[in-house]
Length: 144
Image (cartoon, rainbow, N blue to C red):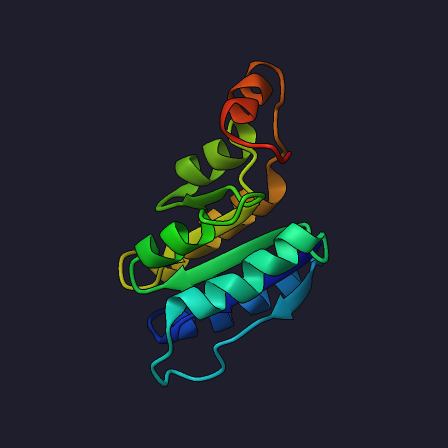
């Protein structure tokens, strides 16, 4: 699977670890930045990842900032993006299984590295269950 990944300065270190994990799991990563811990604006990085998701250039995206809140709010402004802020493996699983999330958001300053790894592994492995959940997604989204 092709995954676009991006982070602001508050998520830079976790992005580097997540990028390596995603490659280790056999996926192709398109790193959209940032490339150092120098301060940047999170909406700019969210835009780069979300535009790739919307264009179909990647199947999914991962965005990381200090809390994950800014990235999730910025990402959900895009019509064909369903971004989920996840803090544990359960929210990661449910975001995929029930909500068909195509962008994962995390906060480097609020989760540990082990938890982040568990979230990413789960989020990449779980498929959308469809069924009754599809109708709910269609209520607020034109994209699947």
